[in-house]
Length: 284
View 1 (cartoon, one colour):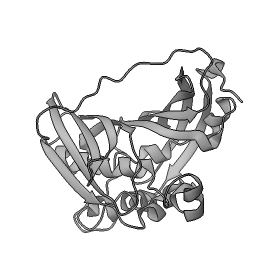
View 2 (cartoon, one colour):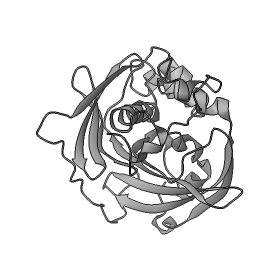
View 3 (cartoon, one colour):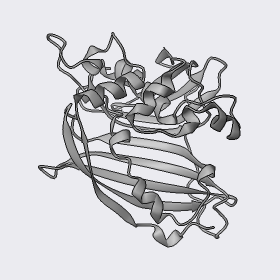
View 4 (cartoon, helix red, strand yellow):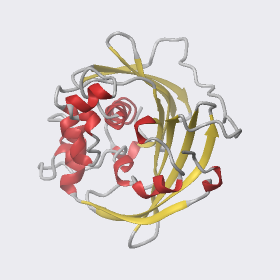
């Protein structure tokens, strides 16, 4: 059982993905948006044009086909390690894209490996780039081929108090709602499966925590306007249980950029290495 380092540069796709208004609303509800965010949770509110959360592309760009190019590995030892998204054009509430995903790199961590994938999605009709995503996947037991260990992180939270802290409570059934956007992994719904994986009960999807954090950035830095947030990158640091409260600490760093982290009530950091950029003219 081994990964194939020669697969670096391999591609899958283009894969066609479509979405409609209700899909955008379901995703928004899944990451905690509600009655105070009707631009994201309704399509027929008078005087309010529907918008799409800028983290929604992490759902649209998923392509299971790329995993077939990794080589062989134990799926039970695969963990989502990092996620990034860059929105090049505001997403319409209905559309279709063609997504090409490539294996950008593989790093040998000794007893484990880190596989980095990058995707670009273009408008099906015009060919114009709509969004890009980047994922890093940590795979236990898959290292040891003598490859590059990869770059070290230089991210540090500023020593001053955050400029903003946004607090959201997740629901006890949050994972059951979020899974309807496409990730049906039983780790997030089946108590017996979660126990076999070493958890007391099903955990929240990492990308759900990512979406909650994206909402915090959107409202704290861009006045809640989807066109304000251009990019967002973060590393998954610890699991979240449905019902946990999340606190998103945000520090502006100038020139339309900010760094952030997300933590639980007990101080456990669940998202770290957070960086985001705003589009020119975004409220902040």
